[in-house]
Length: 211
Ligand SMILES: C[S@@+](CC[C@H](N)C(=O)[O-])C[C@H]1O[C@@H](n2cnc3c(N)ncnc32)[C@H](O)[C@@H]1O
Image 1 (cartoon, rainbow, N blue to C red):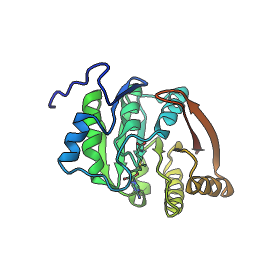
Image 2: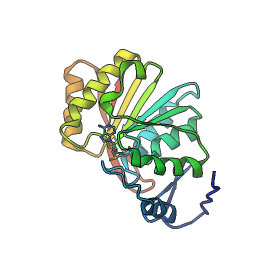
Image 3: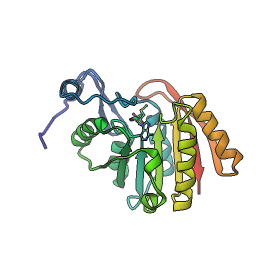
Image 4: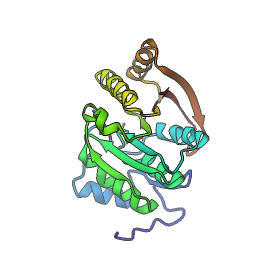
């Protein structure tokens, strides 16, 4: 650990829900960018839908004994939150290895441990998901081709015994196509609209699938 300290009130920081997140302009983020870590599949900032998943998990409560997998984790806001708030085991998965230095930085400043895995959604097998209780993903269904990929992942996860899958999105059409596919297939799936005022006024839809 290099002992990075983020002071109260420091610019380019977001303090919310018991965690500290860094914006793109923060000096530590700029340092990583200069070191040539350039995420290439939109993992270039903290995305907003993750805050609504945090609130859902807080209402629901996650026992410390559970294993949460954050898919398409990016800089890991959700992973960091789950590890800090619930003390549960967290695995952060992303196809893009360049997001992980940013996740590691956030884990360090929030003093939490998160397991990292460079893997595409397509490669998350039933066997790999067997010990996972909750899968959560924020802002991960943004291209049409991701709809079938995520649908197939949801089917594998349910077969593997994952208890709940939560995917959040501000309202893109591939996300609604995914929700419709889950509902048409007779899965226990619902879409709920959620709002928050922190860290700013925003809303997202949550696709929640229970096993
Ligand atoms: C819009 S970002 C959201 C990041 C993070 N969930 C958040 O809330 O800040 C989407 C993330 O999904 C990852 N991703 C995109 N396609 C993927 C795939 N097929 N398998 C795994 N990760 C993928 C990207 O690398 C990126 O980090």
